[in-house]
Length: 335
Image (spheres, one colour):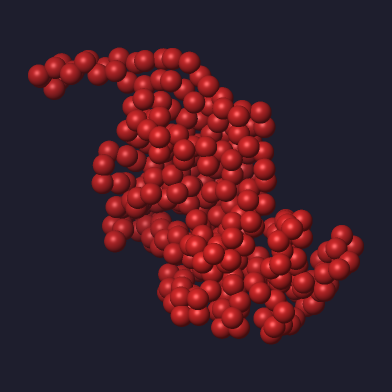
């Protein structure tokens, strides 16, 4: 039985506590939060959980095996470092850290002590993304041309990160998982329309060695909420609408038909339009899958799908995207 301490009971913390408590292989021993009212809410639902406003009670508790960190990103690094030095496995909310240097230090600490770090890129564990991964790996889409994501809504404005670090990070992680390759360059533009606040609107482009290209529209100022991804291949194309309950994924048997001529300018382009298929997607909660995966990695020593190394790659991309914004969209090489 994995004994867990959770630090943070704000937006995502309640979901983490619920899933670790409902898992038959784990138990939440202690919850820490600076707000006594939040702790009181937790005690109402889970009287067996000890609560405290001092997170060090979790760090210093020898009975706790793993620390779950669900705090603003600025606190991820110091809390995770303390937990690792105390010999505890670590679950960290996305994004992993505020800087690449912080992420590298945490990885070194975990490696030295033989501890597991998982970064909570929850989308990777959804049935929809898992299904898309299987389709791509099986060659169902053929050569993939593009990834086009629209991830917009009205709010929630974050205080410590901009819209890229809050929303576009989901697409960075999905792209990394689906393609298994790194982009070669990144370009981003963004604006803040609220004085003193981080960018609330941003557009990101990622370039790769082949003809594949990715584009992400992230926005906190949209009158509607959209969570939609288009993935186009030369055989088939996918529409992933995360807000759709019945048909999250639609596979279109559509594409281009090229009639190649010796003269490049005489090449004819036609379109092939076939059937649309909406496959059945498992409805198991992604966070539940991730909790079991975390426990399995601790028990077996396997590397998590969303490991600290993967989390660090996402921080590198986010840092470069933020830098590109300050340079008015200048493309930056990714090494």
